[in-house]
Image 1 (tube, each protein chain N blue to C red):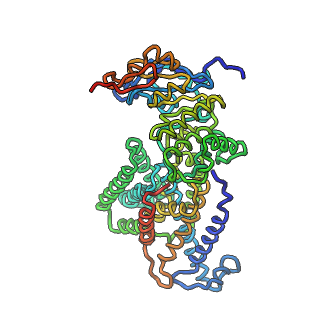
Image 2: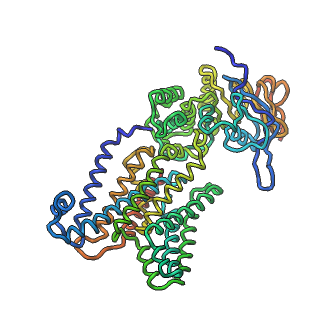
Image 3: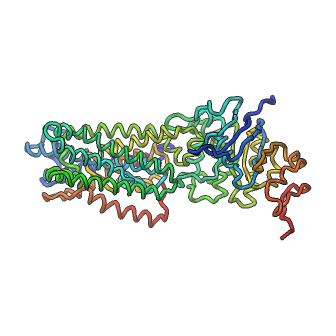
Length: 343
Length: 265
């Protein structure tokens, strides 16, 4: 594989863009805070108004960090899925992994009421949210993987992913029928997707899962590279297929599960970002693609979030709508332009 | 060079096929042959007779139903995946799954059994890659992407990848299908060169029976009922090619060492 040296400039530019988007995201919001005050708040004695300090440190900063983790994490998960399934259209949303996580959350949120009382508050802690969402994604992925072992056709895998998606939404519909209005509202708001209103506790948990998933991905870099030749070739070069598959499924479940648990199901980022990155980074080496996808995904999500909060107004659009508005045309454009998408 | 008398690969009483839920589906059995170091061995037989199944079994891609496979005197099952990848490389009929790989990246992947966890290339690795590209005339393609290559170029690149893996044994599954006559001859000559000059042990399945008779040292002939193993001359003398295909359509011509269409409509 080529050395990382040739892409140094790309990485410097990407990092710079990410930093710029980060500060832009912090600057813009429903309350206008001058940029100099933001710098003061982070690097100096604190902003001149206490309320500005509070908004920055307890609302905008955790939101920006969540946005970066969400964008970066989902994009890496998408990259892993595209290589694992050798399918350019794979991604956490398309394969039904997000719906799996959603099912886990639905069972927890809508089912917790049935148990009621103290137990319910315990069940709704951020950790249990992450665990059920992770488990949900893991189960769906294992199911999709098991079916894809029987059916080699790449298009059927996507259809199977869609089927699992419909199946989980059907279960969610049944569950919601038996739950009360408050729980239902809670679940509906979650399903819109939101990066805001994250407590620092949740951000730390998210960051922990993100790092764990990322570590697993980087450790699988060499195996991912050999999988580009297909299963049989990869095995002939010494790859332990079962172990690698399990590691990749685990990494994706942790990344997509934790992110979906806190930010809701977010469409298209995982699918589109790897393809956009491949337009610029003309390599298939995962040791270059993983960091590139990570940086670009974080950058894109920060931008989406900046748009979603409609600067200078008090309204906020659902983040899922913005990513779909941007993501869907990108995927169509890629399909039309290249006729056949590569991975 | 000291001649090693023991074969590098030995197949004893092998049966290949598939393990079904309702029992074994045997495709071919009682297969016996061996590969000596630095020899070129061809595997021929009609379509569906089990050539690919045999190749997949030899390369540990599917489990055998019975018998022994020994590599350097050691049972195939006792090799770890990486150990085996250092002994045996393959060229399959399937194309690389990702067409986004560049030729250099693809050939460099062959170094995986030798590189560290990140797959970093040492000077020795680069040397092996350069050697592989030089001998297969793929140096000029180095920067190209796989989707830009023709079938013939892609096959040379696939062989280069196997060569960069730097294994004593190379197994190729129908390396000349879909290729024009020039590339077919090119691939055969390349295999002969690798055997003669670099003492590789090459085993390949093929439908080019006449070319295989001319160029290989030994041949494995699968007829469906029996599997024969000998030099091409001995196989011709014993009429083993006669039963390869239904004889009312084509017939083996002993003098020219090739099949001809029988003039009977």
